[in-house]
Amino acid sequence: MEDKVRAPRNRTVTLSKEETEYFRTRLARVDSRLGVSDLVGRTINQDLLEAVENFPSSFVDLLFVDPPYNLNKRFNSTVFKRMDLESYTIWLRDIFTKLRRTLKPTASIYVCSDWASSPSVYAVISELFVVRNRITWEREKGRGATRNWKNSSEDIWFCTIGDEYTFNVDDVKLKRKVIAPYTNDSGEPKDWDKTTEGNFRLTYPSNLWTDITVPFWSMPENTDHPTQKPEKLVARIILASSKPGEMVFDPFLGSGTTSVVAKKLGRAFIGVEVDDTFACLAEKRLLLAETDNAIQGYLDGVFWERNTMNEQIRHAENSANPKNGGCDERGNSEQTQLAFF
Ligand SMILES: C[S@@+](CC[C@H](N)C(=O)[O-])C[C@H]1O[C@@H](n2cnc3c(N)ncnc32)[C@H](O)[C@@H]1O
Image (cartoon, rainbow, N blue to C red; front, side):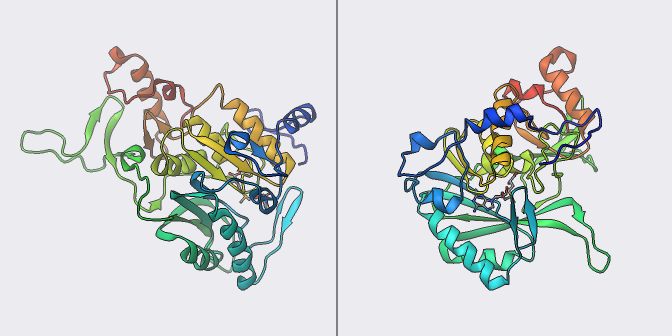
C-alpha cells in the first residue's frame, strides 16, 4: 500500500517496512492437515479454499464471512472482478460448501453483503443453513451516485446450522438517550435510569443497526483497508452469538477486525487473508490489542449510541471513582479505559 501524508491527529494503523518484515514472520500457512491447536490465534496468509481443505471438521462456533461483494474492487494485491449474478452464486456456493464442514452443529454464521449481492448470498445460505434474520446496517458514509440513491446500507445475514444455538441477548443491549422521560404515579422513571451522565434506557437491539459508523481516520482501529468493518459491529455479533473461549473463524479477515475483537472479548480465533499486507496489519492490530482491549462505542457491557462521547467520558470517570457521581458500574473495569465514540 502506498505511503500517505497524514494529519497529526490521524490514528490510522500503518506498517513500516521493518514492521511488515517482522509481522510476516508471524503469519501461518496451512499446507497439510492440522489440528485446532495448530491454528488457534493464527492469521493464515493464503487463499481460503486452499487453506480450508486442511482444516479440521466441526470446530467453529461462530463463522463471520465478509467476502468481496460482487463489485469491481481492488484489495491491495488482488482485484475482485464483478461477475454475472449466477457466477457469483456459484463462487459463493463453492466457498460455503467447504466452510460448512468446519462448523459445529451448534454454530452460528453471519454473512455480509450489499443489496446487489444479497440474492446470491440468500440463494446459497438458504440451501446450507437455517436463515434466521437479515440485519440492515446503516453505514452512513455511502458510495456517492448522481443518478441513483446513495448506497448507505449493508445486509448482514444471520444463520445457524440447527435449532440449538447461542444467543446472548442480554450481552448486546443498547444504551439510548431518553427523549420522552415518562414517570410513574410516584414520579419515578418508567423503564429508564437517571444517571449523572444523563437519562438513558437499555433496550434490546433490533435487526436495524443505525448506531455504528464505518472506521475513520481519527479512530485507533482505522487502517487503509478499503472495506474494513467497525469493531463495534463485530463485537455485537461475537457477544450475541458465542460464549467466552469459543472459536470464531473469519475466512476473509482483511485488516483483522474479527480476530482483534474476538481477542478483546476473550474468544479463540482464526483468520484467513490472501493479501500479506492486510495479514500483517491484522497481526499488528492483534499485538496492539494485548495492551488495549477497548472497543469504541462498547463500554461497561453496553453499546452506546453515536454522539455520546461526553456522556461516556463522564461515565468512565464516575465508574473509576464512584464517589465522583455514583452511577452504577457494570462489570469489566478495564473497559472503563476506553476511547470514546
Ligand atoms: C470485504 S474484505 C474483508 C474486510 C474485513 N472484514 C475487515 O474488517 O477488514 C474481503 C477480504 O478478503 C480477502 N480475500 C479475497 N479473496 C480471498 C481468498 N480467496 N482467500 C482469502 N482472502 C481473500 C481480500 O483481500 C479482502 O481483504
